[in-house]
Length: 137
Image 1: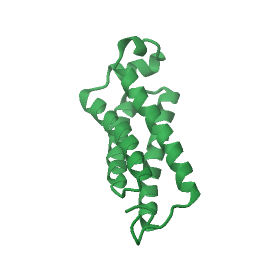
Image 2 (image 1 turned 90 degrees about the vertical axis):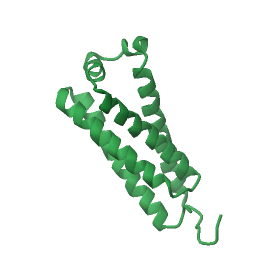
Image 3 (image 1 turned 30 degrees about the horizontal axis):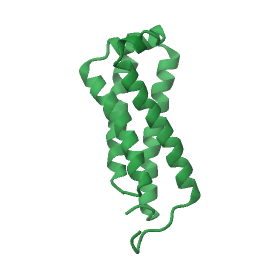
């Protein structure tokens, strides 16, 4: 720990743990969607969104979930570069949601996209807060 870095508040660890679980679940979901056998078990509304997803939306979905996951890992390592990965993740969430909002009217799908957007915005904000408090290098 360098001279200017301050020990994080206990809440930092709770936020990071919850964010890590959220993003790992998203990463697992992404990987499961690539498996046709797993995809067969999804609800019809979700299957229609996934099977009609263009490549750009698939790439941005990967950017959203893996950017968020690696961002949390960097945050846990107290690396201020986490903020950049959270910004990339937010861009991924926004662009993926554009596709989802265009083709789906299913409430559970839209609520999931909105939740992802809220979490991504929160993590960008939180990474900035953590940096301002000198909890990262």
